[in-house]
Length: 272
Image (cartoon, rainbow, N blue to C red; front, top):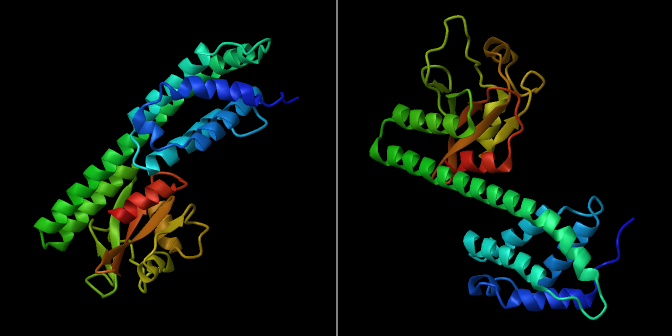
């Protein structure tokens, strides 16, 4: 059974304690109404685990709103730690012992939640730094060389490393070259026949200017089945190369195993 919602008097007492210790950088970006809403939802989740969203999700939503207003991670973390102190320092209101029960529930949850929150936030920052470093290397290669193959090699290498992929060595262009419309960075085995006309899978990315994903190419009607069988392909991502707002080519990223691409991975590929 769910527990009775925390009373307004207890919420007011916790907020009164908490507001006196909040960093100014946090208070300017999170309103009192938002803080009260987070506190009510958080305490409700602590009291009724499994009935509503978990406490970590509630806190990550507040963090996302805070960072969308140019808030810094360390200010948010300090504010959350002050909440713990604010609850510890609250005195019971008259004969009300509700705070004592809440303290026990929160203390059992909060330390674990803060560790998970901080680890996830650090991992997110590391991914963002990795993305920035990747973009800088690609930009440097593209601006310092007019050699098409060199630029494609850099893009290929960065994508393979960033997504821990198997390969990225096939590019499809709008105009025909030595091997149909394909530009291949690696020497292909003599017994392999390059699709001509191009397979619909990469062609879709080239024509639409949008990324195209495939979990199992053996079952996808857009892929060339001889190519899939020859190279034992798993999950694929076809991505357009954009110049002056128009797609001029499409690349193919091949994963080591079956893989569900995240939006973050797709955004990284498209940014590069």
